[in-house]
Structure formats: structure tokens, C-alpha cells
Length: 179
Length: 179
Image 1: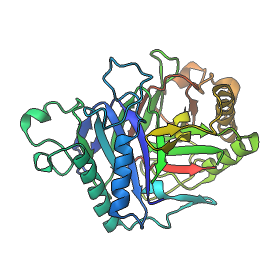
Image 2: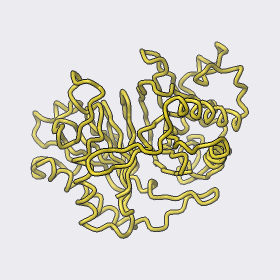
Image 3: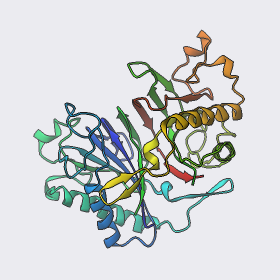
Image 4: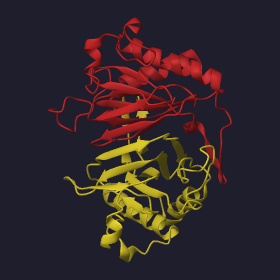
């Protein structure tokens, strides 16, 4: 295992991005919590992104008129938003009464891997990174008025930051995968 | 692995309990997503509950005046609410593009295990089950007015039901454990 993810279907969510009061919102789609082990390399990142984008694992990211029993991939649902939350705590193991974090990347490398992971997700979505800010929010004013709608964005938090998070789901359908 | 859990620190949350419009709220504490494999027995349930209650794995369930660097167990923080969400999807494995659920309990046994898991958590909290409804909501009127406060409750959803869920966290600090 080099990369650990927990994925949940969401109706909407918002993440704190500046350690103070600014929340960025996403609409219908998925939240991805991610932790990196110290042996994570670029090939592992690419493999995880390919699996996440292509896996038919997401319910409730289809348009609301679709039957809820349908299962789709993020590649199939290009309108679904993706919120990527850095979550080093996921890499812990419970030993006795304490959680140990052997094998987790250090913070500086974790930050680089997280940025690269989000960059690969944006590339898979054909998002022009010059059109979005560091958190994936579209720079043009017209797009920012659609803040709570799902338009296929890849929104990231800030590695090592306080992760204020609000989430609403009609069925989180939580998945867990090690890559 | 017989029992798989994902745990998150929350400020507050609400879960749909009657498949229609009734949400039950919890305050500061943790949400526990849980899936059971078919070889789960009562000893495994008890072991998981003991580990979850005693593990020093939870930040942000302490009173708000405490330093955020503190880590505590649910046993230490008897005021923290616990929201238990049945989440069979957690037991899946990604094979190629599909998620396979070999080894997951069937729905009827899963429902029994879920009820027993919540019952053991309530026993660990010394909650008198005759004083709460099937979802763990206190039956007396005075308690129900404190719905959004954390008072050490163990609130459950409904196994196999639609799992509407709203969550807010100042730092979800997601943990993953197999028992």
C-alpha cells in the first residue's frame, strides 16, 4: 500500500482553504480523503488516479433524474465535482490504545504528493490549470457565481492546514481503497 | 478482517432515520462508518467496540477550551456523541473497474450485527436502552430539546435504509481500522 483513499458520494460540500474563514464549495460529486505512504512515487499516483477516475464505484453522482441504482465512474460523469481532502491520519495503525504513523510521508513530501495528485486529477478532467486558482476554483467571475453547482471541478484543500469541512449526502456510500 | 470502520471527528452531524424526512442530530463527537464481513461474531464486535472506546485516537471531541493537540479516547470523553452509520460499501474491493463485495455479510445478518454493535457501544457508555428509542434518541422530552448538543449519546441509523447525512467538522481527522 502506498496511497490510501476513502471516497464518499456527496450532494454538496465545502472546505476551508485559508486557515481562517474562506470556504470553497462543491456540488454533487465525490469527496476523496487521501494519505500517502513514504514509498509513494509518481507511477503510484498515476495508477491511483486512473483507478479512481475509471472505477464504476460512484452512485448519486449521475444527474438527479437517473435511477439511484446506477453506478458510474467519474470519467463517465464529467459534471461531478471532486473534492480532495488531505488526510494523513488515514495512514495510521491502531496499536494498543495509540495510533502509530510508521511509513507515512513527512509533511513536506506529503504536500508535494498531494499537489501532484490533484494535478493528475485535473489533467484527467482536462482542466486548464491556468484557468483555476491553487485550490481549483475557476478564476473567471462568471464561473464563481455557480459556486454550489457541480461543474466537474477538482477542488483541493491545503496540506497541513486545518481542514474545516461541511458535507451533505443523500447516501455517502463510503468506499475504502489502498493503492 | 471481520469489521471495517472509518471514524471521523465531527462538530455536529445529522442522519436520516425513517427513510423520509426525519433527521436525528448529534453534537461534538465522532461518526463511525461500519461494515461487517460474514465471519463477524460477537467476540469480534466486542473487541472492536473496546478498541474504539479505549483508543486515544480522537482530537476535537474534548471540550472546546482544550488544546487542539490533545488526543483522547471516547471513554475519556463521556460527553462526546457517537453517530454510527451502517456502510456496507466499505467492505468492497476494487477489481479492475468494478467493486466486488465477496465476504460481506448478507443484509439480514448485517442488520443484526449492526444493532448488536450499537448495543455494545451503548453498554460501554452505560446508556439505559429503555430510556432511548431505537435510534438512541432519549425518550424524555427535556433531553430532546438539547438535540444539537453533545451529551454522550450513541445514535444509530437504519441498516439498509437510505443514509441521508449532514456533517460539519473543524478537522475530520479520518481514521481507518480493520478489526
